[in-house]
Length: 129
Image (cartoon, rainbow, N blue to C red; front, top):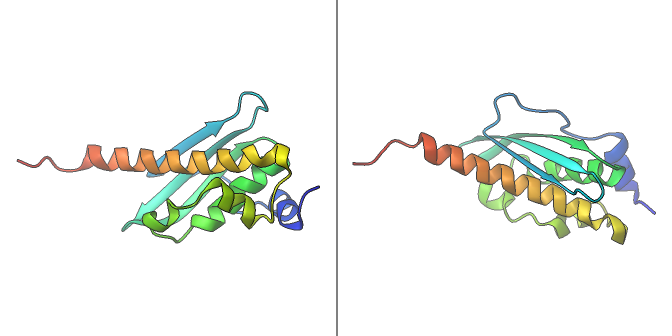
């Protein structure tokens, strides 16, 4: 049912935890299945230098959160924002159809974290005048 990659990321999640000094935090959840994902970003010079996640959910939810962090860590914001839910699922060798929503949640939480980062940046930008 699950690929070897899904099982590996479930049993050995990468980048689990949180960043107290995160530059952006995003959360996505599914009220039907109860999965909740929170992604924390640390960005320097337009590059994702660190990323962590906290996920409450099934094995697929944990695996998609883990692989997402691996896909974007070290990338520029421009490169990372191209990551889609399909890319997350493909990186795991696929997911059962009933678990595809997990890859959507991981991608959604990540994109919300990027949006939060941009919003924080615009608030701290010096006023022009």
